[in-house]
Image (cartoon, rainbow, N blue to C red; front, side, top):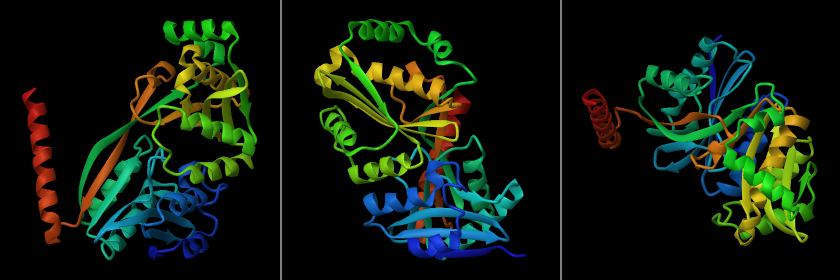
Amino acid sequence: MPVKCEYHDNFLTAQAAAAGALDREAQPCLFDRFDWIESLHRTSLRHKRPALLHAMRDQAQAWLPLLHIGSGHLSALANWYNFTWAPIFANAQSEVERLSLLRAIAQTAKLHARRLTFGPIPDEDGHASELEAALTAEGWSVFREVCDQNHILNVNGRSFDSYWQSRPSRLKNTVKRKAKAGVVTIRIDTEYSPESWRDYERVYARSWKPEEGSPEFLRQLAERESTVGALRLGLAYIDSKPVAAQFWTVENGVALIHKLAHDERYMQASPGTLLSAALFQHVIDVDRVTLIDFGTGNDAYKAEWMEEVRERFRLEVFWPNHPANWPHIAIRKWRAYRASKLVREN
């Protein structure tokens, strides 16, 4: 049976075509679900037209959620809230089957774009490599580069106490000293409440972080994940005032650290560090997760808590027969040549 490929420019027809393949029950990863993609577009990216590419054969499906970002240019439907963006599969178990679906999408993409940009793509499960191979096989010029880093902790069956023994002395001493002072009180909510969320937003507004890009998206995410027991909202207080806050979700053995912030006026009490320690202990000893994911970004403080770093990739893809792409291709080939020359010389 040949692969059938579709292009959807709206979420209603895409959801009908998916027939549940992008629902929570079918997709273990938060960022691969229809509710994440649709909500992100509606609250954060609605000024850009969606382009949802879909391939299917029998029960196997593949999806590429994209956006129109310029004339003939499609890009990943993702932003800073995404830890990852990748092709989404359902009932496609083998590499051969996945590549067949992706090649069909690569053919269809030619009808709608001359340039494609994808990222941040993981490759620990071969996502970036498979997509690159499929596009190359269909004649696209593909340029791959590292665009970000992802800090993680594989728990490997440890208790929190066992994990904590391996942390840097400076971190352990800070937590011990500040906890003993008894200035900070901590609460971890597993159910959404407007009051707790307001405390989270107050802390964020007083922190060093830039203005939140889409508060509505985060609030809806917290509400949605609360209904299935996945929310972990940590709050730290001094004299009943919220001074640190962290937004995590926990599902399928994985804890995702979405947001963290603290009020800089109370840094001396280290409320953010104490709150992190409490949340790590909760997800390790109570939720018994196997992995904690600190998202993207190579912030130095993440190395104190995490033990491994994974690369995230960007694919810049051009149809080589389109004249408008020739300067872009030439520049990237020159960069690749210079980089390889430097490696050889060193």
